[in-house]
Image (cartoon, rainbow, N blue to C red; front, top):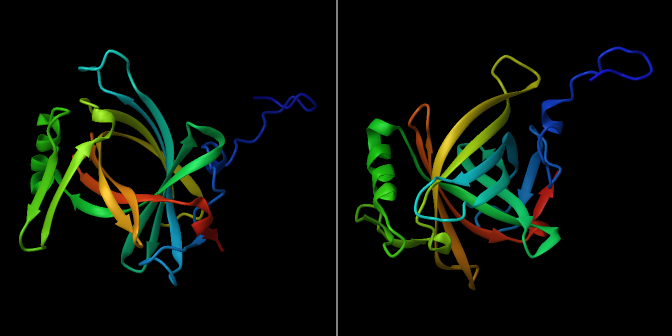
Amino acid sequence: MKNRMTGKKSPKPAEELTVCNPMGIKIGNCVSIDVSGFRGKQWRVTQVRALDAKTNPGRRVRQRHFKCVEYALQCDDEKCFLRVWPDPNNSREWIVLLLTLRYDTPWDGDGQGITETCQSLSPDLDFREDNDAKGIHDQFWRVDDNPDSFMADVKVLEVMDGCDKVDARHCQYEYWDFWRNWKLEGVETVQYLYIETNQKTGWVQGKIGQRIEPERVFVN
């Protein structure tokens, strides 16, 4: 685009200005989260990810389309994520999920087995995880009884090693969303599980968490 006054090309906008940023959080910011297990810690923003997802062509007649932004946070060796999208029932509000890593594994580790389990599920089947060593016996169901996975085009913003500016890279995920009833600080809520497979590297991540009020997140 050219500047109408000078005829010169306008400078390219900063990468962080090219994605929706409803919480005004930038890479390098420190964030406080007023939730049990997260309080008293300074979480540094390491990535901002913009996801544009659609259901795979499959058993649904009408395709679902879903956009959100995700902030990757780190405090020492701990990681968490804030996933944010517009509230469909209130255009002025945002839904915020606070997620932590449940799985983080390569394809030739546990990734292939986790992905193939998701691919084999039908809406009336649940996703189970039984791990006696960790004392985990969990059961989840697909969100909205959706029989299909999502394919997401993802724009990842981050500061690369040895650089002092934010750069962007693009990747594609296939992912599945699940839910179950849960209690957060004694209050009945819904817990979500997202299982994501990077289509290029085969790396699989499982992110688990629940909805929190946006007012519980503070940018320092």
